[in-house]
Length: 530
Image 1 (cartoon, rainbow, N blue to C red):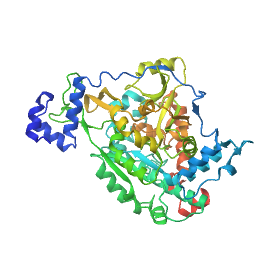
Image 2: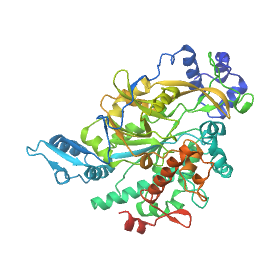
Image 3: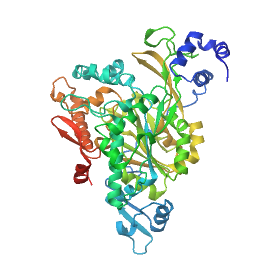
Image 4: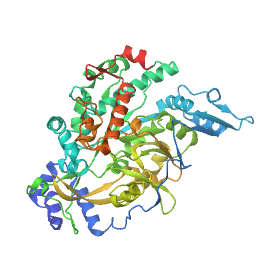
């Protein structure tokens, strides 16, 4: 390990000084890793990574896609039995009573409802992971919001100061996932995920009759130096919180069991090549900007957790962005993945006017289905051309299922070959270059994957910007009826609000009481949900 003075001396050409080194260290930047990334960018290591060239866009009726809510899976009966047997489940599904066996007993057909029951029974070998490393600074960036949703800055102007007070600089996972109709902040993203998984544990116990303390849905996350300690502090409060206290007591769940790995932070770079360290954040001298390496960096960060989960008997992983309120284990898709032995299953929904930052499903020049991130892998101009032609676009729903055996065996290849892409960002903090790896480009590295088309308003209620979270929240007075509310967003906002309300009243186990979403008691959960 080089000492500070040597490192500074050898990297003065990148703008490294004593003051900047100390500021980078204080900001939690992994300085050697950040410097290596800048030198790789200057060498042109990332110049050869071409944008994803879309030969065409798969449509919703493409035979390579399936709808988990309206699907019949037909597979070899013997192979399905062998796969289920290999999982060593504490309670295995009796496939023949759940589906239709062919006359020659060679195959079995299972409809969506049966697939859902099978997926639920796979809970003991399924883990749930959240990409939870980001802080909410970018979430509240007004330059970014003004570019994407200029009218919404005025619509929600009275609430934004309260949002900033609650969220600015906080880990996204412990910021409100919604706003209550009475104008107060709702429960936080990660707390809601935890509640949904504890309720699922009760549903599994009811379905199997097994009441022992079997660990279901092990939880894991990727944090960062900026968010880790704050998140762990918040988790310690869960057993005493309004949302989780009763369920923690009833199930014996300890939030300390959430597995965690910290993503090392890189440094933003100058706009032009040769790149140097960006050192003027917020217009201040010697002020670097710590940046995560993109969610695709998670394969490197979480590699030991994935291996340990596999060694512990976990065979499937549901993983995605923490700020998607629709991200929950999709039992039907999980059953299809398990019974077919595919490598992974990824969700896409029809793109709407509120789907701005993220990826779309493309067929590349080699005929492979891939996810092209808008701006990083496919240009906004190309996407706009498709939209002008009224071509339906399938937007990545920021969640997926992995066959953990395939993932563990391919981790080193993914870490090595997943593209890193450079983009220029212009935000409140300044104008700089960012280096990112995109999680969902892993699709292009899979030979045998599943793509499912899902209902956006059940599975993809995202909050990449704070106004998107507010738009999905039912607040009084109803702001979407205002003449100032953009016409092209009114229908989307109404559907988002209905979808979020359905999620809160369903898998999250809440009820609306006097303008505020409050938790159902364990007895109410048993009466209403089980």
